Amino acid sequence: MGDRRAGGWLLLRHWTQAALLALLVPAWLAGEWEVRTEGFAVSNRLITEGLLLIAITYLSARASGEDSPARRALAWIGGLAVLPLSVWAFVDRRETWFWNWQYRQDVSPLLHITGWAIAICAPLALASSFAKWARGQTQWPPCGFW
Image (tube, rainbow, N blue to C red):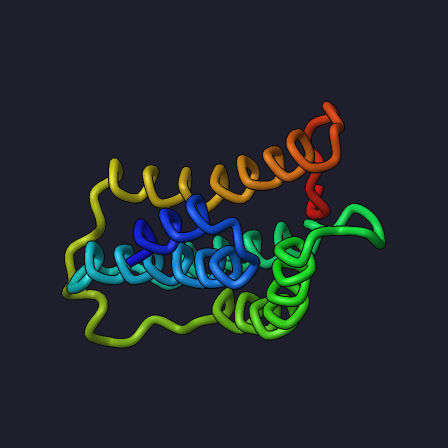
């Protein structure tokens, strides 16, 4: 579904398409991680921290008072999501393992590394593109979570 929204945004360049793309792509990635790790002994920490980094990146999308409607929508999405995701990340970090998890198989190291690479590098790449194309800055990293 995310590829259709990306196509819609590329064709129409309307802020509603960008907002839907910003909501649906992280949801799709989180859903893919859930499906890939179903039945394995793994916590949701990767999803939580990846979504938190995306929310912080969206929050830092605004550059000035005369931003485009798409940037304002991204900032609103990030602003509304940052507090609940921060609380969720704090609580998820203290998650207790249930008794039946000890009988489950661990996730493969390649899948785990790939998941963490996407969770950390996707927000960095997105923030870098925000800075380069819209602000004209070349400094790196431009995102607010450093």
